[in-house]
Length: 120
Image (tube, rainbow, N blue to C red):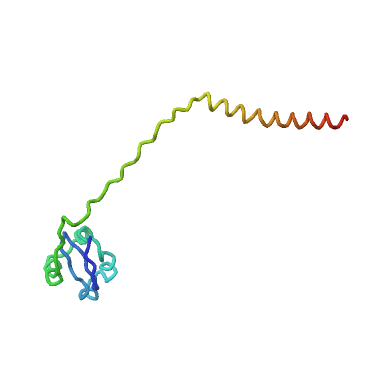
């Protein structure tokens, strides 16, 4: 999490740095800094393995600190439990039988009506 103001700033372990003046000089290019603007860049900074001189440079870009108690706690996702189905297998069989028989009955009724009306 990072404080974003009119400049490009980023957060390293609750410390806020204004890196705007360093954008053109950054060896990795300004895209690297822009990618972490407004975010917690601690892991990105540490993963690169910056030199001791790079760490010493940070002091002149330091603009403040963030109170850790003001950062919202990340909520963990809890998967909802599925409600077990109480439906009997017998109901499924009955439905399948009806899906088969009802169209046949309708077809038989239509055929019977046609035969009846044809003979008159």
